[in-house]
Image (cartoon, rainbow, N blue to C red; front, side):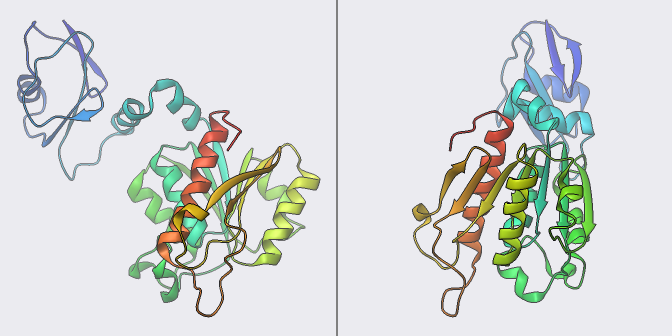
Length: 268
């Protein structure tokens, strides 16, 4: 009987169990994943079952990690994700969260742009840690992504984005995430993409401050290539700051819209 263990084909006897396979191939494995799901009791194996054996704390190979993602996403979906390139403009509360979500699903390549450094006040909603304070956000997010998925191709550039460099920076990405705090920078990026690069898809955000209802944050298709996430009214101001829960909801709306675009699901 044929099965697959950590991406390799094995022939086993009928009625062989998952624990017997573990004991013969990787006895020190702490986790057994059978057909995409962790098992906590011994199970008899069937033809073409797939098993992943994991030792906690041991970094999997690229092939093993990809196998785990494929088992969660299904092969055709994962193949599209793996081949995709996404650009993120701004690596604050939105951009840092979007970048990590896309890395976790196994995105092929990320183009990440910001000019800022990590400050203590960023830690209330952004993906960074105390050890990153003072680092360029481009360097800090690259470190975080490596800890999540070291096999994502990450390109970073530490610079201020303006109308003069947008075309060059975003030429290589069919999907762009607008994740700026500054309203002027938001408008500049969106308007430049729409007018100069109409073949690109852009996922922007507006209205995510405070602690209002989660359900007021929505994703709307504004034009064929423009999507806006948020409630379009809750701006950051005294008494209505930017906080991790709502910012995170909006960021993952953006990440999910990116995923839908990758999978050709263009309606919100």
